[in-house]
Length: 362
Image (tube, rainbow, N blue to C red; front, side, top):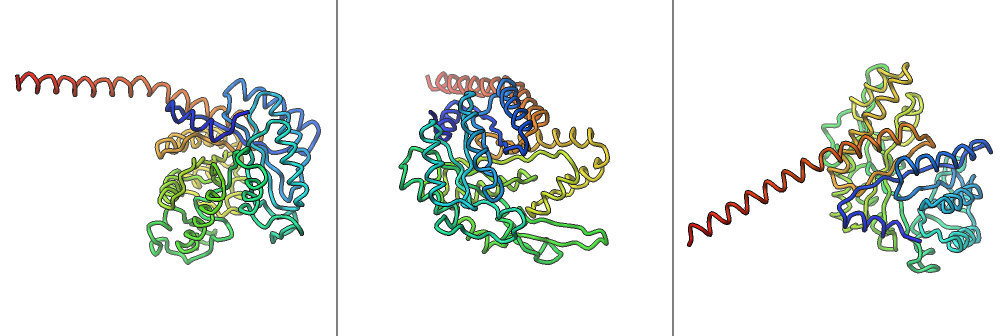
């Protein structure tokens, strides 16, 4: 009954990276059957270190989330079940944690959660929890260190803190420029959005509180610029946050969905990515192929920045996810012998130099 934090530490000790997958509960019975079959295929093709199962907006899929989490466990996967504060009474959290513990599920993602569908503003459930920090504290108080707890991290700032600041990104600080969103309207008007430095510091303070309260890992919100993750990782370390910072990688599948999702989350989209999506919007196959290429490129960049592994928001899709994971693994396997040879040559050269110096001294 391993904890994700232990699995990550084992991989790090061996110098190995890894992949993990996030899924969401389908809306139909057939969708559930298809997802269970997908679990098996993806496990066989590229075994994940762990698999997230989301809770659903407003706690709308809590029962199915639990069922699928237990199915994962039965299939030999390591589930990481999301648990949110939205529309969830304290008694329901107690019950969910007991069910997980009884089944040997030791990994939980503690989240505030999104508002229920049709509700713009988030409101706490009477007698429930106000935020993810409350949830982390409660789980630690009731269950000690039994569970590995993951929490959310926002490399660009939480969407609620990202605001319109004008039309010139040059006016931003160096830190703000790593996470700003630039939008060019149809009339050519440019708008710049960012989580300002002061607000971002508060975000980091809150993340530190979650970690200090007992969070073992941080899983990030999606992004499409690996440099943003690199800046966030440095900010975490500078803030005294030393747990694994796991990058969440979102797939590019359809132009409409991409635009809607990035607009809703106020995500920074590099101009070349936006232009490529626009150019391929009418060609489904070309766009998906580009999405794979982009995913591979970002994955390599993330690992170079120091990411411990790669966490894919699969959208319950396997082909693109596995295509990215397989290509990254193949690329790194090809590079490994070259890196080993380079290291061996360096060691050999150092040894020869040392021998030469000793010989001169004799």
